[in-house]
Length: 153
Image (tube, rainbow, N blue to C red; front, side, top):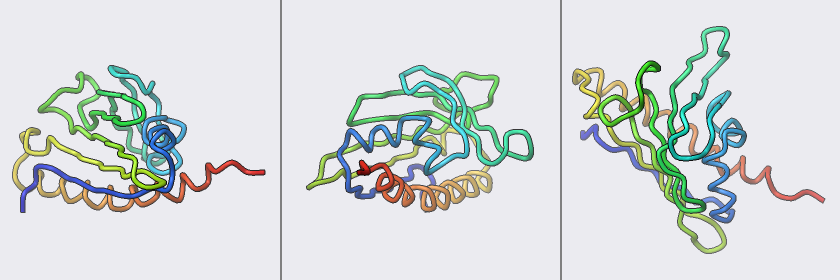
């Protein structure tokens, strides 16, 4: 198995503008992925996402926005050491590409940089599999979350 690039595609019954907000805005991100998110959705913004309780055993993950081109592309680097700037070789790059499709949006998520991290083979395989299971759990949560955003009477 190749542990280089992770790719997923999902269809969401919403416009690319709405889906872009959901995958780029910290407030929306918390609705389907981490428990907390703190960053500005603009290129170069550094922040963090948090899984679990920050003050207990939660995991705080550095997060840096790479590209934000509404409503088509949002990308970020994450998993880099908190005392270093995100760069190729110390972080993973996640890109959300949005394409209009029928009355909704085709969302393509790509995560790269696993091999460039310099991990031992066992760690590389473990990290890759962990991210596969993570994205397979979290990405399907986007469509139901978007459905909650519909305008209510």
